[in-house]
Image (cartoon, rainbow, N blue to C red):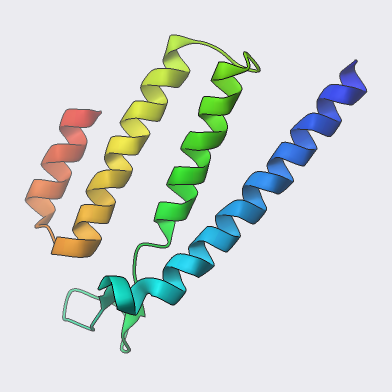
Length: 115
């Protein structure tokens, strides 16, 4: 029984990791088409155009995997649900910052409200 649980957890971890990697690579490849390329500015630490939004893959795959775990009763609890919702909102703010260059006051204010 314990061995089966370890195997299932390992397979899930490998699957989620691979899906996240493939998703991030896909987003990075499509970044110019989607308008997700950051040109260097005085706010940035890079000197060449850089793709943005690769973290979106991590967030989406993590939310899907955790939702599947909740539905299949692999894990449970309202705390996990709250953390998922809060994490998704924080990630959405980060993605909006990638797209619209939010001011630090707006970004930090929204993050503090979520927390």
